[in-house]
Length: 157
Image 1 (cartoon, one colour):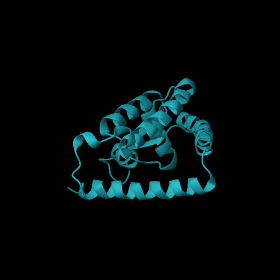
Image 2 (cartoon, one colour):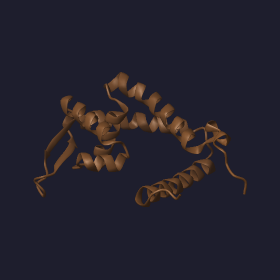
Image 3 (tube, rainbow, N blue to C red):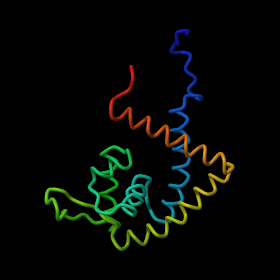
Image 4 (cartoon, helix red, strand yellow):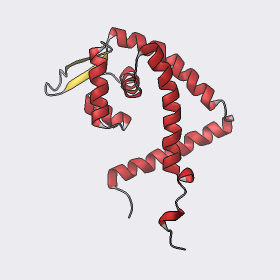
């Protein structure tokens, strides 16, 4: 096998870069819609989306669920609490732990955004055949498992 030189990297074909660009383009387009209607940033919506499905999570749980950094989660949580979209309370089982939940207002906004999010996903995925959607789902699951493996044990040198 030939040695790979640094100038052999074609960034536009490098999978991590392409996934990042795709994610940013999709997220930014959707965020524009959420921002205009609900004054939400991408991290804030992600926090709300997770809490909508999984209540009583701590900020650390959100970091784990979203794979976002602690600072982004902290800022999003602060803004959401300030805007009365989420509440923070003491965990009854562990008084050292603070849990977050959607407020009544947050639940209302969440229930209004979910159909929009599903509409955006359907539109995006509509460019693929049913077989391609199934293949993409399978590929993403495999890549997520490998990336989690990296996170658990580190990259192979």
